[in-house]
Length: 405
Image (cartoon, rainbow, N blue to C red):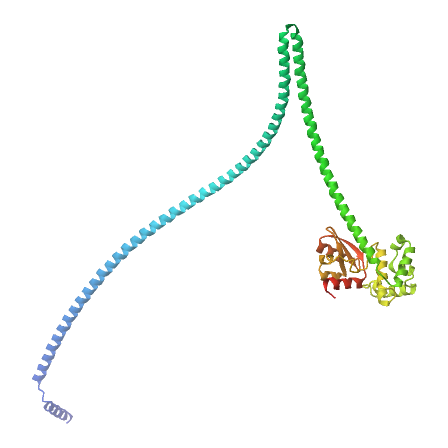
């Protein structure tokens, strides 16, 4: 029953499409023909494409070969140019090296020529000096020879006259010989006189040099003495200024003391000896100085009112054998303070009051300040001669000349 149904369906389908086996074969044949035709066309197209590709490949190969040929030619040209350039560079390098060797040789030769020129110059100077000496000696010899010739001429004249007198020939020969001996003696004497003259000239030069040295020394000593006189004049001028009655009393007592003995005593003992302070006051001051070693005894005395600043400064000056000055305006040379810096003057409590080319006089509150002395010596470039002045006078002078307070 199933098979019958299937066959019926197939028959129905065949009848429905209206196709027959013959039609199918015809269609297949047409398809075969079409496929064959299409295959043939495809083969032809492929053949044509292959040919075109072959022709293109051939053209590419030709172009590649031409390009390679051109590049090969260019490479050969570049290689040749490079070889030529390298050869030229090598040639130039060799030429530079050769030129450097020539320059070095020329430099060495120039140095040798300079040395030879220096030696020749030295030799020429030596020969010129020798020639001058020989010329001078020759001139002396010519003078001596001229004198001898004159003597010989005189002798010849005498000989000529003698020949006229044959009987006196021997006598004239003796005279001629005597003149020759005399001429030789004169020549020897002249040489000795020349030698003595040269020695005398040398002695004169030595003496003149010594005289010049003595003159210079005398001038220096005179300048120093004048400077010391001027300094003493200024010191005397400052001491002539008015001072309190107590200061006059101190000076009167100082005059009665033996100065040599007082220099060896301490400041406190000197003040006690002069009656300025008492032993109790000195003991109190010494105790305070022991407690404060950095303080000076003079400052403590002034601070306690036991002694005036000027009395302390005068005693210090006597103790150190130095002049004491009051810095009144007429004592200070206006140009002297400019020798040092104002800050140095303020810091070290000192001020230049006069100076010359070699020495600067320095007013100091503490003449034992070696640092101050060195600073002023370095700043002024001169030796330093210290004198003693009060601290207040120095402070006032610093304010007056440096504008510092």
